[in-house]
Length: 367
Ligand code: ADP
Ligand code: MG
Image (cartoon, rainbow, N blue to C red):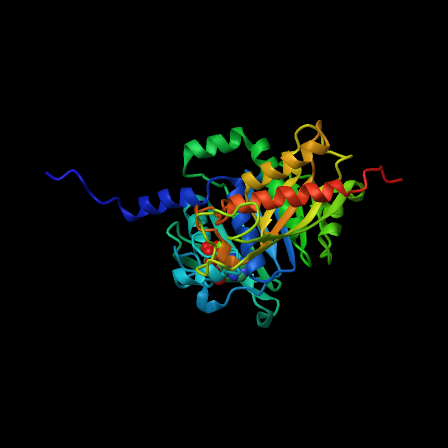
């Protein structure tokens, strides 16, 4: 008798969903990115009991059209990408069409949504674990979408236990992630709160739909933080045939002689200031405003900073602005890892340019 058999569809769905939604951070990341993709200018993230009980994200984006209700939570259904080629010119955060379907499989999940033309009436949508629409009912709602994720991982006992055990750490990580979205989100109000079991609602932070990232940083970390920061505004010209890294094997473009310009924009502690010995919570990296992990870039910046301040690490808010052809976001289902096509050259230019900046920075304490 044959022993190799296909896994049943329901189990495949659960296995794959567990790779998209790995922790509290992935839930929040996917939902906030969906709100941003929907053009929201106001996003509210509410945790109940640090997210253990529920994570709720409210936005004032465009809402969901009734024609999309049936497919919205089905796996690989997306309004953002239809072929692999579209990936190179991607301007949205989402593209895999997996987040909502995965949340249906791993939590008690529902949506409330209304478009501008729907007036004060919206729809509450409930789904089956497969992502199939189960019921829809009329409900009072403002324009926008609210997504409710309750009892995350209720059907994955081991993961649920882990989440309960590590909830304070997980919650800390998710707040750091939200701080990154809040700081980069120019023109977007992002408010975060946590409702504790005892009924007390704590406001964690809120930005003000500011016009500059500097104001966002002040809203999130306090106005005093700004005193310690220098503006980061570097222009790196990466050329395959010149510059520090000439022998790059990889080309970011099919035209080998084309140069690539990378702008590094944001804020960094002046070397006379620091954030204590270990300040990973205050180091945020972005590629074209997409928060992501850039361990090598982080290492390079910290190294340069160390030459000017041996005992502390800096606050870093660094947004790398570059051609969408010059990196790949489709490395892992959670899209946190980004592959930079010519990282070696980029790092060398970055270090040289940052050293030059610090060499000419005013090293006196502000009054
Ligand atoms: P993706 O973001 O990769 O497309 P998702 O599963 O996150 O996949 O979302 C599926 C689709 O649902 C999106 O393409 C979008 O059309 C719609 N959607 C999700 N969240 C929202 C929201 N907050 N407002 C409006 N539409 C949304
Ligand atoms: Mg999405």
